[in-house]
Length: 278
Ligand code: C2E
Ligand code: CA
Ligand code: CA
Ligand code: CA
Image 1 (cartoon, protein in one colour):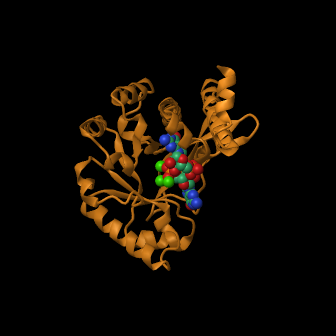
Image 2: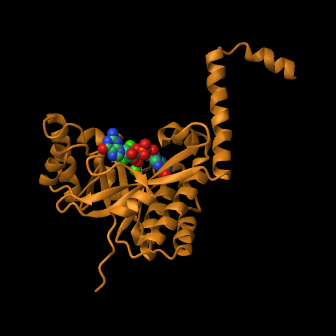
Image 3: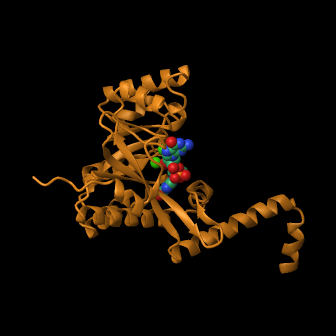
């Protein structure tokens, strides 16, 4: 049988072989990474567009690879989603982020919310119970956790997904729609879900205000969000011109390299202030 298999492989192009081998290797490596605790979270601040004060942060995963160094999520999250391993990675992320948030709160540091990304594949039957068990274990109110979901999830949301979103919201979690505007979806679905935040995708922030089509798109998105009473977060803000334009349009929060890049918890903690006691 082994011989037959080897012969059959000759029919594939070697390029295809290599790619599927690389894929299998990556999947096993990701299993090992989970088992060996090689993932870590970096944190990027989200600031009030008017005052510049930090009001939240987004937790972003990285892979501390023993040979390759720090691997960005773009190089492994798509594979983790494809293979389904994102479900286990996702719960690792949620737990690690909550643990960090609980520690900051114990230290009396003023961070109102921590945003955590959820893949559509995590929306199974047990999601709400699992997430609640984790926040309870860390004695965190669900209200300090913002869950970032994607347009793809909403576009193909069935009754179960809708019920899960409602239950998460009911439990106190905030819901943010990530990468808004990239899904080519109609806007009709927006009010059908219990959303709290819209995150304007960084492709629309680029070149503001001189990029006229982006300026028009951003104005339109902000108009819709304000009408639906959603809070707005602009992503990927890289310079002062973009920041000023967004602030002038009453975008609530800004996130991007202009404010700060994602950084390890040990660095992020230096940006936080002890919260005032009254
Ligand atoms: P995202 O959720 O849209 O996260 C924002 C990405 O934009 C991050 O890339 C961040 O580092 C980057 N970014 C922030 N400010 C700027 C800026 O001013 N300019 C530019 N050019 N980029 C900026 P990162 O950390 O490489 O993450 C890439 C994607 O990987 C994320 O996009 C998200 O889709 C996914 N991801 C990251 N962590 C997780 C996770 O824990 N779970 C899941 N399911 N996905 C994750
Ligand atoms: Ca995100
Ligand atoms: Ca995003
Ligand atoms: Ca993105």
